[in-house]
Length: 175
Ligand code: FES
Image (cartoon, rainbow, N blue to C red; front, side, top):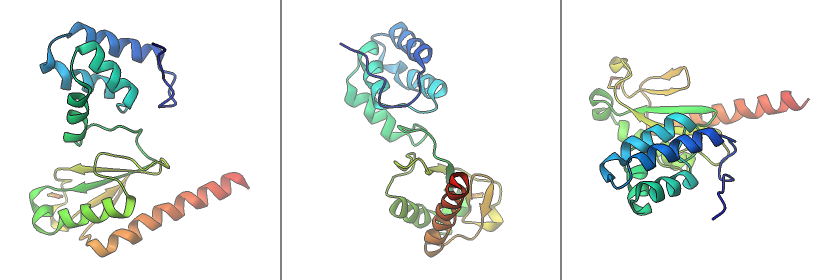
């Protein structure tokens, strides 16, 4: 069967081969699945579908098991990290002050779930545990910017700010 690397842009032939080797080394050991996927993400930055298929084949586990792990753990990403990473703190202080609603609003606004990136490559959304700014709970960071006391209704403005910023950058790059 022809190998297909088209699902992501990286020409990481060597990384693919190393991932294959790692999966083959653990063939028949379904307990090594998370370890192999971790390795794949470390090498590529994310775990695209074609890599999931290769890992399943070489490790000898069902593709549905691989997909189950990828979707269960928010740590794994199926797409490359976006230009802006939005981290929503779900640590205790943030959680009790409405962080789950804030996260849900980001998911709705971006049309993705935590752990995923938008198809335009602009945003990644992730969940983190305590950003060390509990006095500002609920806390959200976007790359290096920190937002405190975030409520659901502030979410669209935060997203728009970065969308507009990216657009401005595009325009000045094109001029
Ligand atoms: S729990 Fe969110 S910053 Fe500490």
